[in-house]
Length: 120
Image 1 (cartoon, one colour):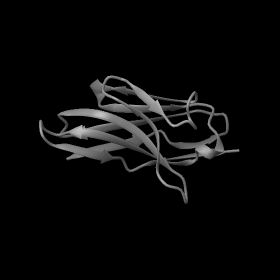
Image 2 (tube, one colour; image 1 turned 135 degrees about the vertical axis):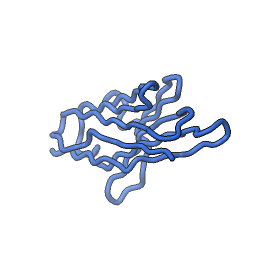
Image 3 (tube, rainbow, N blue to C red; image 1 turned 45 degrees about the horizontal axis):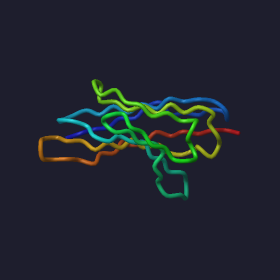
Image 4 (cartoon, rainbow, N blue to C red; image 1 turned 180 degrees about the vertical axis):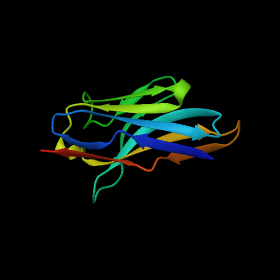
């Protein structure tokens, strides 16, 4: 079994910052790509940022220059530093990780989500 637990969401004024964390635990052999997604009310879930095992990153155009994804492989944790937040960043943010539980078994795992609300 594998579990992803997010933290760090909350209410912030426009222009403010938040840092999300997501820690993976359980029967982990290795973790490959990790990512953050978000889903606003009435909208589809979208990719915010992703990071490979080697540290290569990619971002949604809407967050480039404002958000930074990073990971600590020793802690099985991925972070999302969000600066210059806008009301349109308001959403439920989900952590995602592609986890090997053995040499041949992989899981696409999701966290439960953490709410980010940006007031204008």
